[in-house]
Length: 336
Image (cartoon, rainbow, N blue to C red; front, side, top):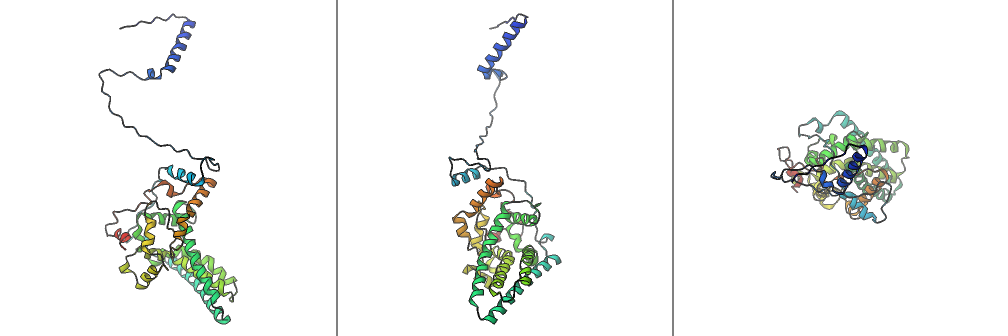
């Protein structure tokens, strides 16, 4: 069947033909597709369905969703994970060795804590009031566990290695998620120097300014500062093999005074969004059960539009390298 079409070469006929053709194509858009020979074979095409989740812009609420529904909708909106920024640490790497600067900061932190402890003991012995500084020390120990959890949550979920002040710790903790066993191979001062510097800068002014007879305040500063500084050592013990740990450490872990390997192991399993406290871990149950960190993440997102890393699902910087480094280090993470 052949058809012939003759168009009168006039401006009016040309305009009418263009209008008619455009109207026809709008009504039948499939005619715009290129024709395919009848005997051609069409290759199967793979189609990918990308689910779309509409989220409310930061600062604006969807009245149809409550807080919990908005949180789960936001977490369901997965974003491509950022490129990995961590570098693998080896057991003999320079990044695991202590430097003289590390040792100096740890010494400064220990000195400031010991000065507070000495002032507290001296004041308590002089006044005979022992109960008050003991209670203050227990409060400092409990709040140190909470403080390490909040800090751990912050550097796990926000910032990059280039973030001022905190960048090196952010990079170290991301690398720790990938290679957890390396913390057991860090030298003592290498593992504690960052917190030792923070404790020295915070507690030393108290030692110089607060009167020596303030036994409770000095006891609180000594207990809280000491637990915060040594929390990284408690953390390292939580990744160690029980048979290689000192018996006293194992006893304290079993008693719940220090965070145990079994309790901390939950932090290294998906979705990597809980069990952040690393002194005793006593706060982990309360914080996770009441979704305190989830609420804080919602506040940060709706106020500043920043998503935490835990919302993006497992990524290279979070997922443990099961292959290890060839020395069996990976097995230390699960051997309890």
